[in-house]
Image 1: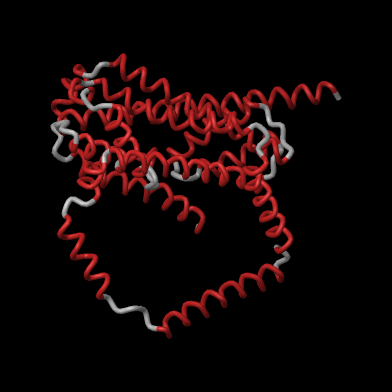
Image 2: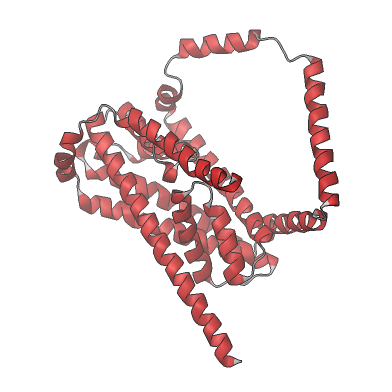
Amino acid sequence: MKRSVSVSLKIALPLLISAIVLYFTYRDYDFAMFRTDMKRINWLWLAAALSFSALGPLFRGLRWNLLLEPIGYDVPKKDTILTVFTGYAANIIVPRVGEICRCGMLEQNAKVPFSKGLGTLVAERVVDAVLLGLIVLGSILAQLGQFRLLLTPDAETAVTDTAATAAAPPYETATFWYWTAGIIAFIAICLILSVRLHVWDKLKGFVLGFWEGFLSLKQIRRLPLFLIYSSGIWICYYFELYLAFYCLPTTAAVGPVAGLACFAASSIAVLVPTPNGAGPWNLAIVRMLGIYGVPESDAQPMSFVLHFCQTMIYLLCGFIAWVALKFIHRSAKASAKTDK
């Protein structure tokens, strides 16, 4: 019962957040004009942008393969690539579950322990966080005024909030010690229960496996190739957005540097756990394009169509990848039985 409630919340809450943000993003859009707007879109440029939707997961799968090598697992590239596509689709259905799905599938198909696979994914996320940080920093420095309008539309309010925060009284010392004692007690209870329930060895094995997977980042044998794949992922993400700007004359006027600022803002927005960033991503694109003078009547349909098509491609590719993995490993098992 508790598990079903938890699963329902993991699905319902992201959908609710997405629906609320989408409502505020498109509440002023005249959907009666949707068919007319579709005719205005240059679908060749949209197709060019969407072609990069498949290249990003491809580079991610190849990079994951390089992270698995140092910990002793020579996983076929087709396995890591197809597993990544499946994880992308799973993330759309239940946000943030794709990483768990990837590790589980790799354990089932390639016999990589779940904990070690998870460690490599965390290492992967660290690299992505660094690259995203550099992209955001570079775009902010290049387009400082636009980010200031996006993030701090009212400077006076920001100053007032800062003054109020500075004037707020500090936490009392007793409260601090209460929290400290509570955390220590919680940890102690968890340790006692783990010993009593004989799960300590399993927990220790999981942590050690996770740490080994994470340290694979320090032992990469082909570092230049790893950096090429890492850069390729984010270059594909960028062109997936920027080329779509050429779908309409007004958005086509947005230059590549401004496109980078839009990309940085949308990349931060997708950190909110909604299906493929639906809602926060759309809002970030519409707001950023508005700052660059693109009317909402153009930014809204362009962002909606692009996001919808991206989502459909990820779902379709993920389903095909899942079927392909099933077929490949079922055939492999059948061949192994025949050989015996």
